[in-house]
Image (cartoon, rainbow, N blue to C red; front, side):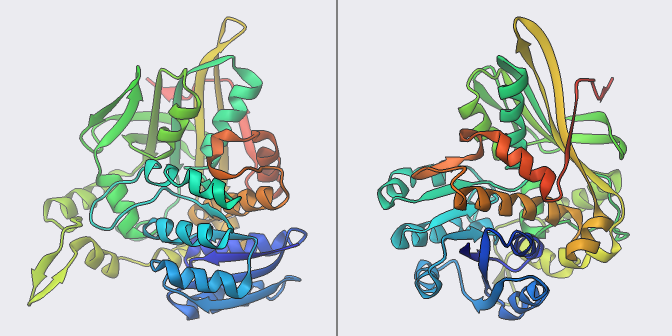
Length: 399
C-alpha cells in the first residue's frame, strides 16, 4: 500500500480522495493539501470512515519549492494534481526534483491567456525519464476516459479509425439561472475560446459556439451539442495518426448560452486586468467570485450526464460505427461522495490512473498520455469504481 499526495480541495479533489480511500488495498495514507487548509480538513473528515491514514496540509502549489518541501515531508509514491491547471508546471517540476510519480486531469494553462495544450508538458518527457519516474497527463473523464474509450475501440473493433466525435452532455439541472459545474474561471475560458477541430492533417478554427448538432443520448434524450476545442484532441490525433477528423462537442442549454453571451458582450469574461478604483482586477475572476460555488451545486443538482465517443472506421475492410459512453446520476454521486456527477466523473478516473501506476499495470519513465497504454485494465476499473460504460453500434445523430 502506498502514500498519495493529493493537491487540491475542490469537488474533484474531494471525490478523488474518497475513491482512493475506498481503494485502500492500494492507497494507505492520503495527504490532502491546498491553499485553504480548512477545505482540506473537510475532505479528510470524510475519509475518517475508511481504514486509511488521512492528513490535511496547506500549500501554495504555484511555488515549486513549497511542493518539494511537502513531498520531502511525506515521501508519497505519487502526486495527484487535482487543483487548477495553472499549477501543473510547478508541480511537475517538484516531482522531477523529488523523483516522484505525477498525475493530473487537464492540460496546463496560464492565467494571462485562455488556452491549453499538452505541448507545454510534453517537453518535460526527458527530464521525467532521467528522474526515473512517470507523469500521466489528463486522467480525468475528458480528457482521460474519452481517450481510453478511443483506444479500447481501436483495439477491439477497428483496424483503422477514420472519424472521432467526443460528446460531453449534461442533462442535470441545479435550479440557478446561471452557474458553472466546475471552476467558473476555467469553465468560461474554455467555452468562450474559438472552436477548433482536426481534419485531413490540419487544425481548423471556427468562432466559439457556432457549430451545433443534435444527438439523441441514452437516459437524457435529445441534446444540442456545440463544437469546441478540448485538449484530448491534441493527444488523440498524435497517437491515432490515421484519423481523418476529430471533434469535441459539449451540450449547453439556450438559457445558459443567453447568459454567457451577455457576459461576453459586456466584457465580464475577459482575462485581461482592468483598473477599478486604482486597483487592477480581472473581470473573469470577479465573475467567479459572484457566481455560485460549484461545490454548492451537489445537493441541488438532479438529472444525469452522458459522456462518450463515436468512432467510425473499418474492420476487415468493412465500415464500422461504434459508440461507447458512461451515464452518471448527479443525485447518486452526491449520495455517495457529497459532490455532483461532474466532479465524480473526473475524480474517479484520477484515482484509477494513480492505482494503475502504483500497481505497475501502467508503467514507464517519462511523460505519457492515456492513449499510450493498454485500455483494458482502465475499462475494467471504471466498471468497478462507479463509472460503468455501455457500448452500441447504432447512430445517435439527429438529422
